[in-house]
Picture 1 (tube, rainbow, N blue to C red):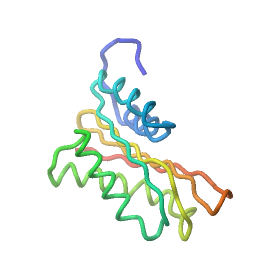
Picture 2 (tube, rainbow, N blue to C red; picture 1 turned 90 degrees about the horizontal axis):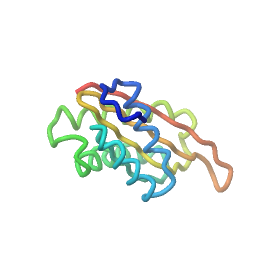
Picture 3 (cartoon, rainbow, N blue to C red; picture 1 turned 60 degrees about the vertical axis):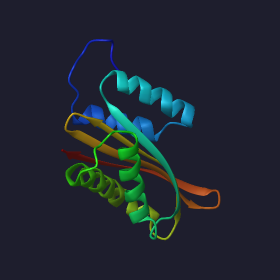
Length: 142
């Protein structure tokens, strides 16, 4: 992350933070990583999701926005909600070719530093134990 030296973070750093949050194994690891990022001024949120992909797109976007507000990553205003929704939609479009018609399960990670907002989606995609994995990433500036 950092060696204790204060610095500014850009879109690459915030994208990496959202991806790391999405790749945490459990809530304990997730909360620990959130605390570390918080010390650096990076706000994060994560939410699990599972279900059939085609019918779930709106639910996934809603969960990303709601968890972002709940964790204080964004405020309740159109601009910030729209940024998370747009970045989530972008991340989903990257996963869509593999996921259409199949079940997905995994985690959505959201990170923000100043005006950079990034959403990463890590999903296992498939049927039974025959899973593929995919990561989608979206970024917006607020």
